[in-house]
Each structure stands twice: as C-alpha cells, then as structure tokens.
Length: 68
Image 1: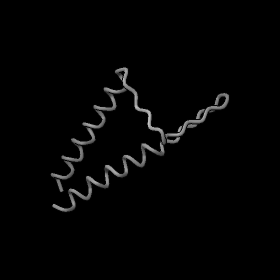
Image 2: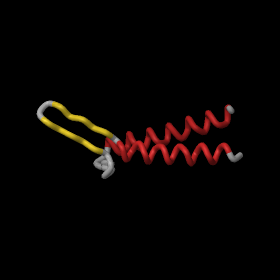
Image 3: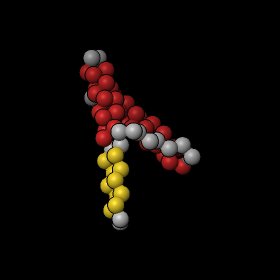
Image 4: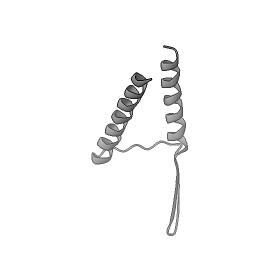
C-alpha cells in the first residue's frame, strides 16, 4: 500500500510540474472537447475532454497497479 501511495504521489507531482511549466511558458493546452461559454460578465468553463482524458489515464494506472 505504501509503495502505491508513493508512486501515485510522484505521478501527481510530475503532472503538476508539467502543468506548471505549461502555464509559465508560452505553451497552452486547448482540448477541443473543453467547452467555454462567455456572455457579458459570466464565463462558464466545462472541461469535458480533459475530464475524460484524465479518467482514462487514471483507469489505466489503476488497472496496471491492480494487476501486480
């Protein structure tokens, strides 16, 4: 259990570092399935594509660790 938590933490730190790097540099992530609506002072952002991508990635990681 401890090994799984350590590896999961390292993966989250790696993902956070990548996102931080992308935010500070000129690179930007635009998923075509992320919806953004803006009307007047209201801005609604719904990250559907990012949620699906993250769900698939986490499911694969879980499946990989469960098999061992």
